Length: 178
Image (cartoon, rainbow, N blue to C red):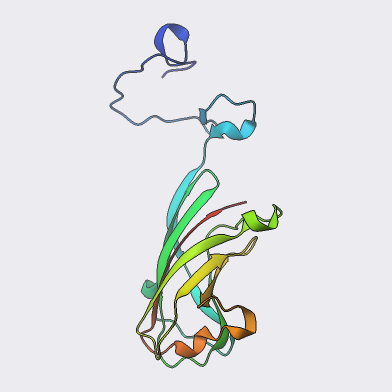
């Protein structure tokens, strides 16, 4: 068991050497980056798997078994990176706006408007008809990714009509969590 400062001659600038085992920190402790802010202590890392769904403005979009409606995430500090795949199963009746719902951690809200939105990379395959460029964004405070075709928004975005049995949406996004 070690306590106190690890470094050469009591300073924080010394060389530790080689550590051949994991370093375990006490609960509530972390790595201090020597700032006057309490948020400069790194003590938050998390990773996991989450289940997601596809939701449209109207109608329904059935999804394949949970093996094709999953994502993985890693949280380092307040930065969350997600990626996943959702596959349509059966005959969808959805129309209008499309969202991937079920992100594992809530995005931040309450900052300056422009800094709250996070871009999402979207790739679609096996669609019923040709789809223009597709992108997405994570809105502030909502555990979802809005998917957009060719820059259209709201009622002008009828991406759901392109879905059929076997349509796949792969996604990736990085956002700031609460």
